[in-house]
Image 1 (cartoon, one colour):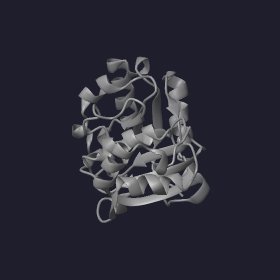
Image 2 (tube, rainbow, N blue to C red; image 1 turned 60 degrees about the vertical axis):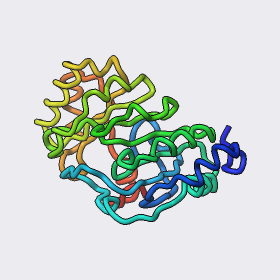
Image 3 (spheres, rainbow, N blue to C red; image 1 turned 90 degrees about the horizontal axis):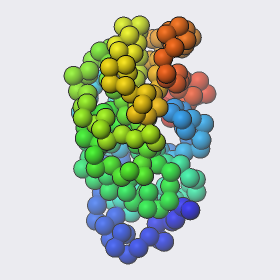
Image 4 (cartoon, rainbow, N blue to C red; image 1 turned 120 degrees about the vertical axis):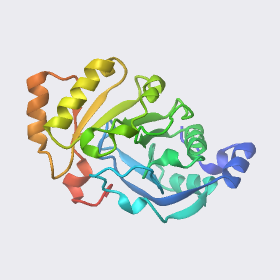
Length: 230
């Protein structure tokens, strides 16, 4: 059951009122990726990111935005009256109040996913939240930022994502999966960089090598072109 912000306890709402986050945007769309693809979803995009991946399509979220009390964020999300909420960025965990927002969204009854780069500690994320965690490939330009200790905080309801630029990235990712036995940990997503790696080519490699992953394309880009999440 999803609760409105007015139905949460006074103690919770006091915490939500005094805590705040810098928000790039809040919008309603279809989820374009992960096992939740296609579901109507409210996206809460936080401002800021310590990484600079070469294929990033949300650079506008690095700066700016507006500061909002968590209570105001909860109220805006409630206006859409849907089950699914995705907290994304930028890198949402770069803001210290992000775990509090996730916890309060879970308390309100939403089904929540967190899109994170994997470069920051995920141990404080509420276990009710589905963590969608990137592992950065060499082609991203940020492979050294991978925080491998995060893997111990993942469970079967989380997902690991590799965004692949080329066949070299693909081979690197397959080696990581085998060496760390990631397929025993949680579902694994392979996503081709839009406009750089043809999805059919990636699909052919996965079928050839029988890699235990889900190949995904970005539904929102198929539907609406280059604008993220619309």
